[in-house]
Length: 157
Length: 157
DNA sequence: AATGAAAATTTAGAACT
DNA sequence: AGTTCTAAATTTTCATT
Image (cartoon, rainbow over all chains, first blue to last red):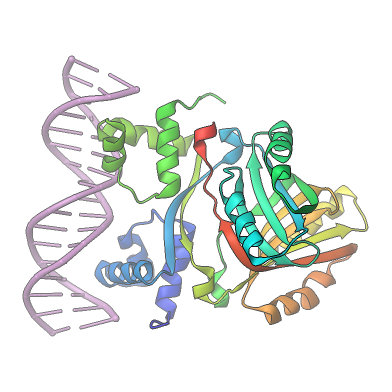
């Protein structure tokens, strides 16, 4: 990998993962360091790809996208070219925010975010079911969400 | 709601969702505005809760967490107090990054991120299966991920 | 609500230990 | 790797329109 994380790097990642607008100065103070080395470490973590990007997390419900649905899918064909095509098609649907190839009772697990149950129905009918080789499709409609984060507990690494 | 988004707000959200380190100045230029009103709009979007937080997105694999697993769970009891207790327990497990109550073939869908298949096995045996009233547990192990984002296509709102 | 300018703060980098 | 110091850039506030 060319670069191993030490405990300072890990602490910096933990802080930025929780609040990326925190200033380098504030992070440095929390670590008992000056800003320059902290700044350089952050740049290194970005350059090496430990930090992929910085994003604003929006409140989907406030924006009008009130429904999250997970969809388990099995395909009838499993040729490599078809799987690739399937993933490509799925990527073009703006409703889909995650697409995982999985082992278990499905081939793929999708996560999508839409306005409401009607928009979900429209997606299924006018987009998803038009894909060829589709086998079983099983939807899990989110009723409520107890936890939903991207933040990894770094104390365990 | 007290505050309706106009097209400028939506564009600002779209930009910050993609890169929250983009400067107010750069956003203002893209919109043909000066920094002040853009700055004030961003503060308003934060205050009103449209923007929940700003985070660094890490590369889980590089950090050593190479496995993502989805777990569908049914419970044997469904009293309100038990459901609440279940969610509370689940929230204490650092491996779990998402916990959704769903309708369909499961009661809950969990998403967890762990080091490897061994850590997953350990989680199941020494944490998950110790919870009472657990019914069916079905794991979907991620083989590869075609798409995984938090970014919502705002052109449709 | 937006403009333009000033003040406060942060970033980014050079020189040095 | 870290510290200190400094210049440049950005953020933030505010008087004005």
